[in-house]
Structures are given as C-alpha cells and as structure tokens.
Image (cartoon, rainbow, N blue to C red; front, side):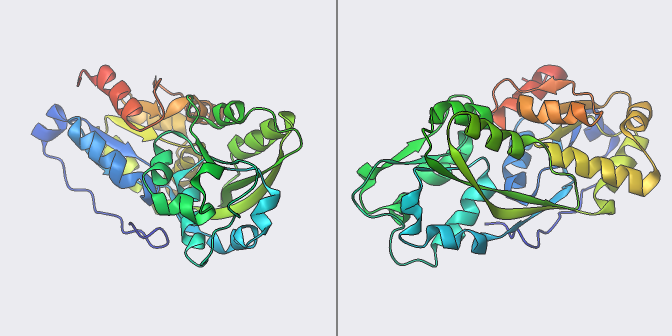
Length: 301
C-alpha cells in the first residue's frame, strides 16, 4: 500500500519530440491512493502519464474508533462510504479491535460504497467479518450510479435511522459542496447522517502545479484529468501562487489542452471554479470511463 502520509512523488521524465507527438502527455492531479491505478490505465491506453498531485491525504482513523467500539455501532443501520480513502481509514481503525463491531443477531446492517471502491469490501472477507461474525446480518450495497446521490437513492428511505458517514476534513482549501450535499440528501430521505472525519485532505502546496505550468509553456501537455473538485481547487491555488495564472491564462498558453473530468460531480465542481471541462466520463464507477473518454477525443481507442 502506498504511504498516504508521506507519498513519494516520482519525478516526471523528459519527453522527446517523437514521444510527445505519438503519445499525448496527460497530467492527473489525484492523491496517492488513486495514483497508481490511474497511471497504469493511462499507460495501457497509450498516454504518457504525468502525476501532479494537488492534494495530500492523511488518515484520521482514530476519529472512527469511538463509533466502532462495541456496542456503539448497534445504534446505526448503515455506514456509507463515498471514497476509497474512507474505507482504508476504517480498515486501519478496525485493526485495533479484537471483536466484531456488531453482535451476530439484529437488524440488517448496510455497508454502502461506490463503484470500484467496493472491491476493498467485496474482495476482503476480513473486512466484513470485522463488522459481524454473522455475514447474513451484513448487506453490501453498491449503487448502479456511482455518485453520492446514487448512493442515497439506493439506500432508500431512512425512517429516522442513523447512518455513519466517514468523510474527509478539508484543510487549506474551501470544502467542495459534495459532502455537505450528500449529507443534506440523506436528511431529506429521512436518514440521520452522523459525519465523522476519516481522513484529512490537504493542499499539496504551491509547487504542486509547477510541472503543469512548464509543460503548458512548452506546448507539451495534451490533457489534464481531474477526479475531484478539491483537486481542481488545489491546482488553481498553486497556479495563482506560482505565477499569478488563472485558468484563462492556462487556456491561452496551451490552447490545445483537453480537460477531462471523472464523472458529472467532478465536472460540475470544476465548472463552478471556472474550469471549462471538455470531456466527461459517462461511465464513472472506475477510472476506465474517463480514460476511454479521452481515447475518443484523441483517437486512441
């Protein structure tokens, strides 16, 4: 597993003119917990991946422990994960417990997760057994539409029941509306969402956008891929601090740049920050969708 507290940034290699022409260089701003997977997909599809993380992720698993300590989770009917990092953080917290969080008998407990993130649960028997020795008491829910709104719809009516929501605490940037909107939708469906910090999302600092600037100035950047609104905000903050650029300046400097967003939630967030999105993945339960959408744009399919 990659170190989420102190990720090592691989130095981007220089691109020869031949490689630049045949293989578009694609920057992506995802934090370390998603970087390897997205980089691999981009490479497989014929791109030169350029990792420019604008966010750092730091687990705060200690915040989850009071809720997991038996029998405290019995007062909840579900836990709703909206990110891979939240699942990983709860897994870390679970390692400190020797007994399951729930008794073998009681009402069905729902563990909900989005798209590819659910593999951390479905492919890990020990994760479910940490919740309950009786697997029949656990229902794993993966909504057909891999968005927070899709998760709310799949959960159905809450009827006053409590749902544990392990979500990020944003540090150094404005919190995007995704989590507040998610919690609000749960409330409107009759759930009582209990927000708990599973991890911190921090701005990676002013230098995180330097490679994007330099590649733009040399005309060597074909596309940039965003997988969250906070990533967009982090890059914009870096561009402003580094050289006083806004996104309009990026477009003027590198007019051929294609902006791709992983799903409509990220696209809407980017647009709200003034970043026009050219490509939006229609399939967003995994990164395959945004990479395939780029392929259609560049003719690499």
